[in-house]
Amino acid sequence: MRIRLTTRPLVLFGAMLVIALIATFPMRLALALTGLGEAGLSARSSVGPVWFATLREVHFGDVELGDVHAFLSPWQLLVGRARVDLAGPPVVTGEALRGGISVSRHSMGVDDVTANVAPGDVFAPLPVTKLDLGDLSVRFENGSCQQAGGSVKAELGGGLAGLALAQGMTGNARCEGGALLIPLASASGNERIRLLVRGDGRYRAELLVAPADAAVTQQLVANGFQSDNDGYRLSVEGRF
Image (cartoon, rainbow, N blue to C red):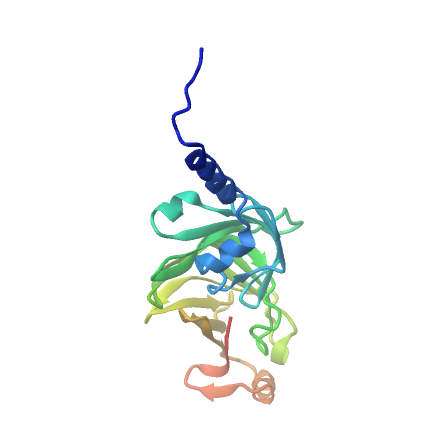
Protein backbone atom coordinates (compact mmCIF):
# COMPACT_ATOMS: atom_id res chain seq x y z
CA MET A 1 0.00 0.00 0.00
CA ARG A 2 1.33 3.38 -0.94
CA ILE A 3 0.49 6.59 0.86
CA ARG A 4 0.76 9.60 -1.39
CA LEU A 5 2.24 12.67 0.21
CA THR A 6 0.34 15.65 -1.15
CA THR A 7 1.62 18.29 1.27
CA ARG A 8 4.42 20.36 -0.16
CA PRO A 9 7.76 19.41 1.43
CA LEU A 10 8.54 23.04 2.33
CA VAL A 11 5.25 23.42 4.26
CA LEU A 12 5.67 20.04 5.94
CA PHE A 13 9.25 20.67 6.98
CA GLY A 14 8.29 24.15 8.15
CA ALA A 15 5.55 22.72 10.37
CA MET A 16 7.95 20.13 11.74
CA LEU A 17 10.48 22.87 12.52
CA VAL A 18 7.87 24.95 14.39
CA ILE A 19 6.87 21.91 16.48
CA ALA A 20 10.50 21.13 17.23
CA LEU A 21 11.22 24.73 18.25
CA ILE A 22 8.20 24.82 20.54
CA ALA A 23 9.13 21.51 22.13
CA THR A 24 12.68 22.69 22.86
CA PHE A 25 11.91 26.33 23.66
CA PRO A 26 14.13 27.30 26.62
CA MET A 27 12.44 28.15 29.90
CA ARG A 28 14.72 31.15 30.59
CA LEU A 29 13.57 32.84 27.37
CA ALA A 30 9.96 31.99 28.15
CA LEU A 31 10.18 33.71 31.54
CA ALA A 32 11.36 36.88 29.83
CA LEU A 33 8.89 36.84 26.92
CA THR A 34 5.79 36.05 28.99
CA GLY A 35 6.45 38.71 31.63
CA LEU A 36 6.98 36.20 34.44
CA GLY A 37 10.45 37.65 34.92
CA GLU A 38 9.00 41.13 35.42
CA ALA A 39 6.54 39.61 37.91
CA GLY A 40 9.51 38.71 40.10
CA LEU A 41 10.48 35.16 39.13
CA SER A 42 14.17 34.74 38.29
CA ALA A 43 16.80 31.99 38.27
CA ARG A 44 20.58 31.82 38.00
CA SER A 45 20.35 29.13 35.33
CA SER A 46 17.79 26.99 33.52
CA VAL A 47 18.13 23.51 32.05
CA GLY A 48 15.45 22.02 29.81
CA PRO A 49 12.49 23.19 27.70
CA VAL A 50 9.45 25.12 28.87
CA TRP A 51 7.44 21.92 29.41
CA PHE A 52 9.91 20.46 31.93
CA ALA A 53 12.82 22.56 33.14
CA THR A 54 15.06 22.65 36.17
CA LEU A 55 15.74 26.13 37.53
CA ARG A 56 18.78 26.74 39.73
CA GLU A 57 18.85 29.27 42.58
CA VAL A 58 15.33 30.54 42.00
CA HIS A 59 14.20 33.84 43.53
CA PHE A 60 10.79 35.44 43.75
CA GLY A 61 11.75 39.04 44.27
CA ASP A 62 14.35 38.97 47.05
CA VAL A 63 13.06 35.71 48.55
CA GLU A 64 15.18 32.65 47.75
CA LEU A 65 13.34 29.46 46.75
CA GLY A 66 16.30 27.21 45.93
CA ASP A 67 16.35 24.75 43.01
CA VAL A 68 12.96 23.80 41.56
CA HIS A 69 11.35 22.05 38.62
CA ALA A 70 9.22 24.29 36.41
CA PHE A 71 6.45 23.52 33.93
CA LEU A 72 4.74 25.96 31.56
CA SER A 73 1.00 25.22 31.29
CA PRO A 74 -0.13 24.98 27.64
CA TRP A 75 -3.81 25.22 28.62
CA GLN A 76 -3.36 28.60 30.31
CA LEU A 77 -1.69 29.92 27.14
CA LEU A 78 -4.91 29.16 25.26
CA VAL A 79 -6.83 31.62 27.46
CA GLY A 80 -4.18 34.35 27.23
CA ARG A 81 -2.38 33.65 30.49
CA ALA A 82 1.17 32.41 31.09
CA ARG A 83 1.46 30.14 34.11
CA VAL A 84 4.52 28.30 35.37
CA ASP A 85 4.00 25.57 37.95
CA LEU A 86 6.85 25.05 40.40
CA ALA A 87 7.79 21.93 42.37
CA GLY A 88 10.64 21.80 44.84
CA PRO A 89 12.53 18.76 46.11
CA PRO A 90 11.41 16.97 49.30
CA VAL A 91 12.50 18.64 52.52
CA VAL A 92 13.38 17.19 55.92
CA THR A 93 10.80 19.28 57.77
CA GLY A 94 7.75 21.15 56.54
CA GLU A 95 6.23 21.12 53.07
CA ALA A 96 8.09 20.97 49.77
CA LEU A 97 7.46 23.89 47.44
CA ARG A 98 4.49 23.53 45.10
CA GLY A 99 2.25 26.02 43.36
CA GLY A 100 2.26 28.36 40.41
CA ILE A 101 2.86 31.92 39.30
CA SER A 102 0.91 33.39 36.42
CA VAL A 103 0.58 36.62 34.45
CA SER A 104 -1.69 37.99 31.74
CA ARG A 105 -2.07 41.37 30.10
CA HIS A 106 -3.87 42.88 33.08
CA SER A 107 -3.21 40.51 35.97
CA MET A 108 -0.57 38.63 37.91
CA GLY A 109 -0.54 36.40 40.95
CA VAL A 110 0.42 33.18 42.65
CA ASP A 111 -1.79 30.10 42.81
CA ASP A 112 -2.08 27.49 45.61
CA VAL A 113 1.47 27.95 46.86
CA THR A 114 2.61 25.74 49.73
CA ALA A 115 6.21 26.25 50.83
CA ASN A 116 8.66 26.94 53.62
CA VAL A 117 10.71 29.99 52.69
CA ALA A 118 13.40 31.97 54.47
CA PRO A 119 12.91 35.70 53.75
CA GLY A 120 16.44 36.60 54.82
CA ASP A 121 16.74 40.33 55.52
CA VAL A 122 13.64 41.33 53.56
CA PHE A 123 11.74 42.38 56.69
CA ALA A 124 14.69 43.55 58.80
CA PRO A 125 14.71 44.75 61.54
CA LEU A 126 11.61 42.58 62.10
CA PRO A 127 13.05 39.17 63.11
CA VAL A 128 11.09 37.02 60.61
CA THR A 129 13.23 33.92 60.01
CA LYS A 130 10.79 31.67 58.12
CA LEU A 131 7.41 31.81 56.43
CA ASP A 132 5.22 28.71 56.12
CA LEU A 133 2.71 29.19 53.30
CA GLY A 134 -0.36 26.96 53.06
CA ASP A 135 -2.27 27.01 49.73
CA LEU A 136 -1.62 30.74 49.38
CA SER A 137 -3.31 32.34 46.36
CA VAL A 138 -3.27 36.00 45.37
CA ARG A 139 -4.59 37.67 42.23
CA PHE A 140 -3.84 41.29 41.28
CA GLU A 141 -5.74 42.87 38.39
CA ASN A 142 -4.48 46.21 37.08
CA GLY A 143 -2.40 46.46 40.25
CA SER A 144 -5.32 45.93 42.63
CA CYS A 145 -5.78 42.85 44.82
CA GLN A 146 -8.99 41.12 43.73
CA GLN A 147 -8.73 37.72 45.37
CA ALA A 148 -6.59 36.23 48.15
CA GLY A 149 -6.69 33.23 50.45
CA GLY A 150 -4.57 30.69 52.25
CA SER A 151 -2.67 30.53 55.52
CA VAL A 152 0.65 32.02 56.59
CA LYS A 153 2.76 31.27 59.64
CA ALA A 154 5.74 33.44 60.48
CA GLU A 155 8.53 32.14 62.68
CA LEU A 156 10.46 34.80 64.54
CA GLY A 157 13.84 34.64 66.21
CA GLY A 158 16.43 36.83 67.79
CA GLY A 159 14.48 37.64 70.95
CA LEU A 160 13.68 41.18 69.81
CA ALA A 161 13.35 43.46 72.84
CA GLY A 162 13.07 40.44 75.13
CA LEU A 163 9.88 39.16 73.47
CA ALA A 164 9.20 35.42 73.60
CA LEU A 165 8.00 34.70 70.05
CA ALA A 166 9.23 31.13 69.58
CA GLN A 167 5.70 29.90 68.79
CA GLY A 168 5.46 32.30 65.86
CA MET A 169 2.41 34.07 64.48
CA THR A 170 -0.36 32.83 62.20
CA GLY A 171 -3.05 34.33 59.99
CA ASN A 172 -4.96 34.11 56.71
CA ALA A 173 -4.47 36.24 53.60
CA ARG A 174 -7.15 38.55 52.24
CA CYS A 175 -7.55 41.66 50.11
CA GLU A 176 -8.04 45.07 51.72
CA GLY A 177 -8.13 48.43 49.99
CA GLY A 178 -6.61 47.06 46.79
CA ALA A 179 -3.63 45.50 48.61
CA LEU A 180 -2.85 42.02 49.86
CA LEU A 181 -3.23 41.94 53.64
CA ILE A 182 -1.68 39.23 55.81
CA PRO A 183 -2.60 39.84 59.48
CA LEU A 184 -0.60 37.64 61.84
CA ALA A 185 -1.03 37.20 65.58
CA SER A 186 0.70 35.29 68.36
CA ALA A 187 -1.13 32.76 70.51
CA SER A 188 -1.66 35.37 73.25
CA GLY A 189 -2.72 38.08 70.80
CA ASN A 190 -0.33 40.55 72.46
CA GLU A 191 1.97 40.52 69.44
CA ARG A 192 0.72 41.11 65.91
CA ILE A 193 2.18 41.70 62.47
CA ARG A 194 0.25 43.49 59.76
CA LEU A 195 1.78 42.94 56.30
CA LEU A 196 0.42 44.92 53.33
CA VAL A 197 1.67 44.15 49.80
CA ARG A 198 0.81 46.29 46.76
CA GLY A 199 0.54 45.07 43.19
CA ASP A 200 3.86 46.71 42.26
CA GLY A 201 5.72 44.74 44.95
CA ARG A 202 5.89 47.52 47.55
CA TYR A 203 5.15 46.35 51.08
CA ARG A 204 4.72 47.70 54.59
CA ALA A 205 5.13 45.44 57.63
CA GLU A 206 4.20 46.56 61.14
CA LEU A 207 4.96 44.70 64.35
CA LEU A 208 2.58 45.78 67.11
CA VAL A 209 3.20 44.78 70.74
CA ALA A 210 1.00 45.33 73.79
CA PRO A 211 3.47 44.75 76.64
CA ALA A 212 2.36 43.98 80.18
CA ASP A 213 5.82 44.50 81.70
CA ALA A 214 7.49 47.89 82.18
CA ALA A 215 10.91 46.34 81.54
CA VAL A 216 9.73 45.04 78.14
CA THR A 217 8.34 48.49 77.34
CA GLN A 218 11.74 50.05 77.95
CA GLN A 219 13.40 47.51 75.65
CA LEU A 220 10.82 48.15 72.95
CA VAL A 221 11.51 51.88 73.02
CA ALA A 222 15.25 51.23 72.96
CA ASN A 223 14.76 49.10 69.83
CA GLY A 224 12.94 51.81 67.92
CA PHE A 225 9.29 51.02 68.72
CA GLN A 226 6.93 53.98 68.73
CA SER A 227 4.04 54.32 71.19
CA ASP A 228 0.47 54.58 69.86
CA ASN A 229 -3.07 53.85 71.06
CA ASP A 230 -2.72 50.09 70.48
CA GLY A 231 0.67 49.59 72.12
CA TYR A 232 4.14 49.91 70.62
CA ARG A 233 4.73 49.72 66.88
CA LEU A 234 7.78 49.03 64.68
CA SER A 235 7.32 49.52 60.92
CA VAL A 236 9.40 48.66 57.88
CA GLU A 237 8.79 49.41 54.20
CA GLY A 238 10.40 48.01 51.07
CA ARG A 239 9.87 46.26 47.75
CA PHE A 240 10.09 42.57 46.91
